[in-house]
Length: 133
Image (cartoon, rainbow, N blue to C red; front, side, top):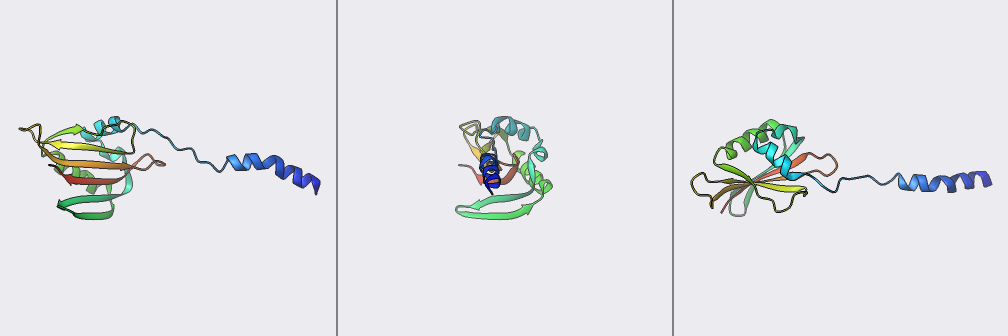
């Protein structure tokens, strides 16, 4: 019985530390957004993506479990409206934004495309297309 107790006491620190999962605290959002701007979105999308579109003020259409092909087609349609710029304030967050700016007027934003990254999988799990100002 003493041997069993000693064995359990010696193994408890090992078992206790194995419960923690290591998660990256930094995600290189700017590099990812540059790849998305150049059309390499499929490399970063999760198998099923939540897709949110703003239709009018406080009216959103939410589609769950969309395929990467569907999301890429919708983003290509939005991205074709103007110039693309990475506008997130900090590099390293799990939420980042690409703005679609009017070709003629640099101050007019047509759409904001926001991407949510899963911390464990390091893949985009949600895409939001919001109206600009």
